[in-house]
Image (cartoon, rainbow, N blue to C red; front, side, top):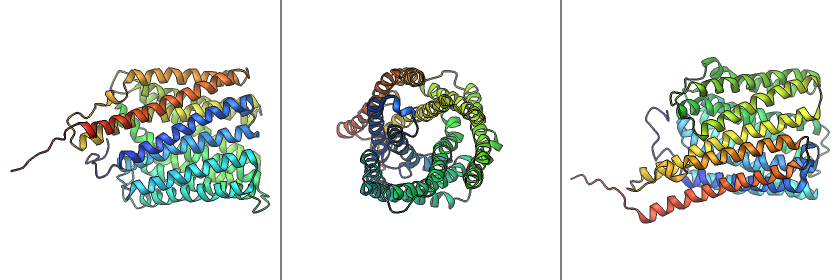
Length: 426
């Protein structure tokens, strides 16, 4: 569950910390859809400017914002780690991250070196600060759960991917020759996709899947050794790039297999949950895990048969994995936080979770999301479909944006118009 003593208001960060980062992520998600609408089918050419811009809007703008917001909330829950002064910390990160992403994207469009220098400063300072702040507190824990242990390796990966990214942005800024650019770029993508995003999702799921859906626990071997193994394999794969590219491919196959096994076990655990009714959040998890498994299979095949369509399909499904899980967590976290904070403050009319976002709303979004993913998959072979997929992506993130704002307004309305319960002890 939350922890042994439950989650108190003193432990939880203010609701504005999480909602602010979620809102920023949703807005960047909308901008990602606009980017796809503009660049069209070029986004499937991984070396094109359109693909690079869209990937960074999704990875840095959308996913990073949501994952940092979730970390601010989940650290007290899964590890008992309380971050002091969370509002100024989150505001600093939020502003610097936004400025860094905007500088980076405009830099890619204009190729102006000064913008890449700004991106280096803003992104480097904000993300390394987050990694140090959260990582140092996790390392001080005397007793680790599978989730907290996995988070440490995810944050190590975040630190490495940022340092690798700084090598590339400073090369774009013409501060050095960038002689190892192609190798560093491959390392960066590996740690970003598998060491940070996928490993953080895996680590959080070790506790939240069981907690939210009352499932059997993950196998102890998986929880204890998978995160460290993934991190070690990524380090080995990166080092092997300096010696033998083929060796790197074989090592990465082991990473793909580990994540495919994790996805399969998660699907099995979800089928064993004690609550028989499957709401939209369960299906978001299922969509995410099926997408992850197929994506990993395509990457394994691609390691032996170099084929652009296989790689493009793997990327689309990996994005489906990440967005599906984030949306599932979103529909759990936002209603819960709204209720929890108002209830903890003693308001009589604190809205119940289903009154913040009704389950039917989440289910409609789930269907929209499925159609979006299918549209992107078909767009690989039918270029015109990419425009429908882009519009559906914009609609999906606008949907998310609206419900964050709605929850914020409901929270403020309750504070301003409801009476508090006060206990008088004579």
